[in-house]
Amino acid sequence: MAIQILPTLSLAETELEVSYILASGPGGQNVNKVATAAQLRFNAAASPALSEHIKQRLLEIAGSRATRDGVIVITARRFRTQLRNREDAIERLADLIREAAHRPAYRVATRPSRAAKRRRLDGKAHRATLKRQRTVRFDD
Image 1 (cartoon, rainbow, N blue to C red):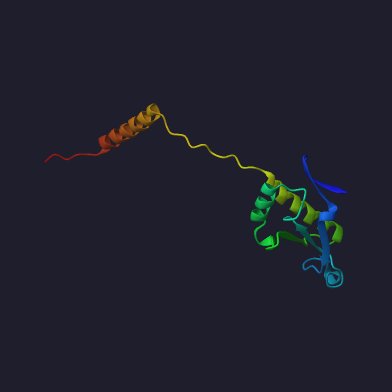
Image 2: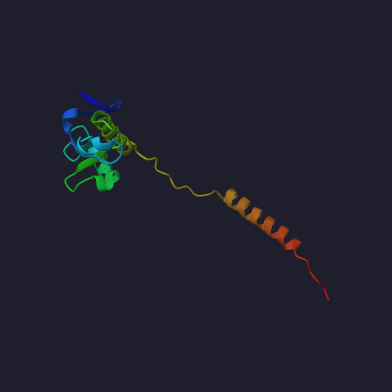
């Protein structure tokens, strides 16, 4: 089964490795007995589904969640059940990949026109004369 990330991008579930560990937090005595936290491992560097551009951005965005080998490790322990924590970890990975796939719009540097510069300087001169007129002069 494939996990749909974007309309044009999906990951095979075989690329994800999910293991379960003991979790802290809510659960009472059960938290000491049952491994409910999900730890998801995704080898981004070797994934055939991702382009080189997305792989590079994904590893940058992942930060400390990525290992030197290009494996992203996500630990989900928000919920009390393994299934919900597994789904949470997969959704967080999908969000990271979506963010990496989004290309930021580049700003094209432009210069103000001569008329715009003139208007700006005229406005500044006008404000300066108004402020100059506010001062009270004492002629002795």
